[in-house]
Image 1 (cartoon, one colour):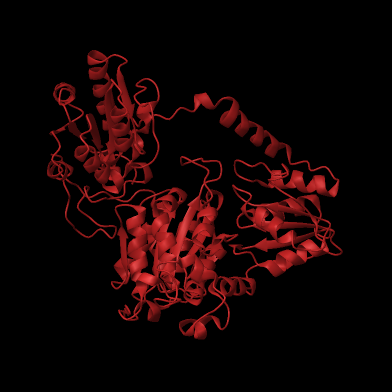
Image 2 (image 1 turned 90 degrees about the horizontal axis):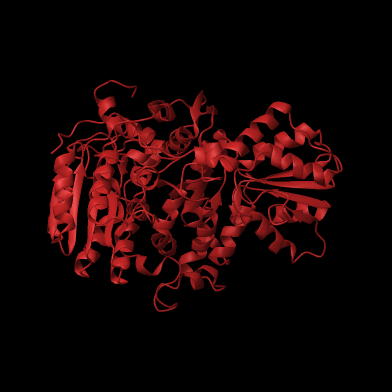
Length: 609
């Protein structure tokens, strides 16, 4: 057993305790993660729950420091994103303000609770979600706005770090007004910016208000209609119903909730439309793209020729302002990160207009459908509309050519590697050595999501499939039940085991799969910055002592057919144990346990914290 040791936080340059202090009116240079934290603190947030995920994991570090200053605030690392969202939802149902930050793939994990949770009409519930144009640090270039629209919850897209702070605050206000969760969408280009931000007043009174869970309210049916007026759980029908009832009269007047939400968003002052001179051309710039669009317009000297709609609320759209720019211009360029989400909505709106501008964007090929939208991309598309040539600076062109060369033409040279001395590399080498001896090519390796994803690349090449967190065990079970004659091996990390591996392992045991589960336990959530989890460190997000859950004991309770813990640095012991486990008929589990090499060095003070 490895002795548990306190793990100092990683990358604190993105987090600071200063954002928790009462400094109204003062300006500080802070990161985007700090700005989210500050906005939530100013809003009087009381409960914060998250699972680590780039690029927003450092928000929790700042809020954890705040919780040490304000004891009534609760901040936690949850075991997965759905658990985190449900914790925040429960807090909102109890009448306090709650926040759940996550990466975009976390939206996939919470979607069941998000859709049904919106049915409950929670107030003061905000999700900060980090999207990743270009998939630079995640598995997919996913656009969370489609899932938000699926759940019918509003989306706010700040255009600057100051707005990140301000609109995180306003998101809580909006949530309480429309009685829905509200998504604050951050893209990586904004997530890693740092800028001067002027602080506002902290609403201590909101944070300190007493919880008020209304046990007389029909939470199971949502907040719009009592039984039996609508079918049980028919959220979509209640959301769009044209006959509001008494419970809603003080909130939405005579409007259905969907129309009321659109009306509130349409009247918000955050979306601004500015016409330059007698502009015949327009740009609808969404979120972070507003910065890039304004730079492109200035670079072209086209301020008097172009109308600019700064779009902060991408769902629902501010229809009156969108209609105005479409009516008063000849051509409109829509610029946004990842999918043509707003562009599609704008086109749908234009279909009901007698006359509107011609719309350009991703759907016309004027803006690339993939990768991060840049000033140069917008400048070229805008120049084409204006019939002028956009010539970026020679240095910018050289940088862009270099990026294209590295990311596309020479991508093979950028193969990910394990950190020097990584115990997971040692564990993988032992596994591959034994499998080569016993099975040759007659073995199927099914991976999972984490640092150990590097087992898939040379020289080990020990992964034939990798999908999402917790999927490896179930996929391996499916391959076995399909009748494969290979030896089936699944591997998973310790944090991912707690995230979503346990239910998959129970299923494998119950349904009599025949496979080896290799748990690569490096005692931390290593891939996102060495955050604690239920089986590591024995500390919470706020560095309070807590229990350590032992994966070996948990696995034993699942009645697996074999389980043993090894030190992957001990090659002889590890290979011997793997040979034993591979002979087992049923579900065998080997736990390769050793502290992350980088973390061990940091604990010893040998490298920077």
